[in-house]
Length: 238
Image (cartoon, rainbow, N blue to C red; front, side, top):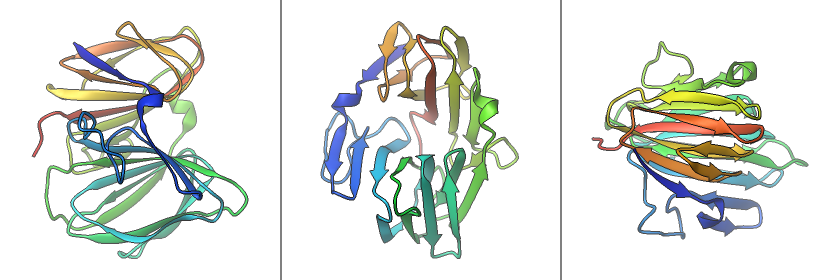
């Protein structure tokens, strides 16, 4: 097993007044040649958006874009006719494909919006753009991995055009759970949302992450109550 720890304080940072963002991988004006991507995982942004503020309409193509609100409420509108609001406990996915424009705003005027935005390279180019969202049962992630994304439309969670999986977990203190990699050759990037855990004898705190390759499984030990986001992606991809 190969593992590399990414400390919270080593992420990129930008403060635009209305937006504070931490970047796990090179994004916008922040560039680190050692942190371009992790396999098919291209972007993991940890955003804080002021009340009423957000991203005006802008274009994307050939990217799978996943948004996970952590608190507050997000308003989405796109060029393929979707307009909706999602909150913590929900997940949103957009396959940009041949091209789509969208806007993302904090739907609340007096409350900060916190979210993860994730971009994953697709395994199919120029597909028809699509949008989906799903409300999750938070109880299903207590001391286990709750699947929130996969390559399969019939599976739990939302789906994308890539052999990727995504899970969230809420662990109580002193719990231990095992993760088994879904596809041989995939790597796993785990972000600690809060709390403290031990993975592969590496101790991680809030917003620390670990990138794992060449493993068929591994175990997570919680040192205190902890929330996790786990992203499994191909390391070699189309």
